[in-house]
Length: 375
Ligand code: UD1
Image 1 (cartoon, helix red, strand yellow):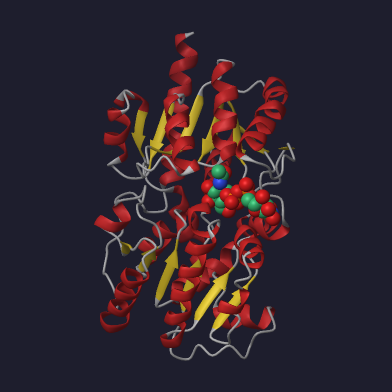
Image 2 (tube, rainbow, N blue to C red; image 1 turned 135 degrees about the horizontal axis):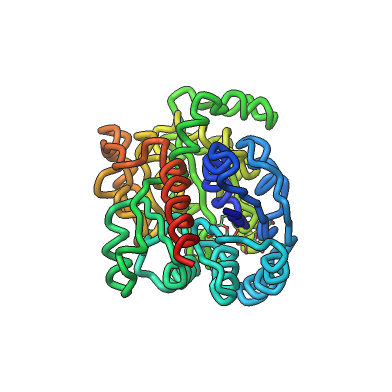
């Protein structure tokens, strides 16, 4: 079987790594080709991840780059079509919920090529989030849907998707986390590499990541959040790797002064192993990322989510995650609880066990065999 695997943006890379490895382990049964749309292209957002995670270099790179949602999605579709024609694929496999995920799924399904969606069925029920639109539409047009948490099936059933298309296999991102934990790069080494060895973290530290348009594109919201982070940093120093979108907005709105203080360490976007090491030793992580909510749950580190909702409810029900929204008082209240009582305890959800990609590869082979035999 020839499977064309798609990546586009940073959160896709740690998901595809174990899937490519699981396909490779099947030998001649599967020929997996990797296509990168080029949605993310900076060294820090892109190449670092391929190197650190041992992902094979993409066989094809569409070099799409940045743009508005319409421009970016259309460019991926336009350039993906001939690549798909040339690939003669038995199936296209997409991961996550970025614009590249939807764009490639849409092209493939209209050409009659089956679409496999990994990390299906997650819903925030917030359609103002671009990723929510990508999730809903990709799931609708996927032939096989692999889910990370059992509740995803209810979301999919509600949208009319037949349960026979859905397979609960667990979380490939946690495969990557478990495999790489022994190689995680810790704060002292990061400080040295960034010439910031003077950063005082003797009493522990918090990690902050922010990049959602709903948090960083509105000057008032961003100012309020950064002010709250500044208050937190009076108690616990904050390590803050900056997404390019966030750095751009902070500069545009003239908010740099709020965070240019010794107890807030601003860093460039971190590589995978650095981010892992930072999270592992943090007393608390504050984030608006989806993946980090899951990674902190797997690591047992308290997570404060700076959003009003999550598409990953299991991280709240079973894991260490608390939804705080954008309200400074709420954020500070949860933060104080973490400092006083160590935060919320949690457990690791079912099938977040390091073997999700193996289950995907096995299930997919069975399905493709059946499909071939039926035609
Ligand atoms: C995208 C995904 C989001 C994911 C995030 C992780 C969509 C709709 N959004 O958001 O789900 O959580 O990636 O990072 O697909 N930029 C660079 N260098 C790069 C890439 C981007 O400087 O390598 C800058 C550009 O100014 C660009 C901006 O970041 O305009 C936004 O990039 P884009 O790919 O549109 O979306 P993200 O905000 O990164």
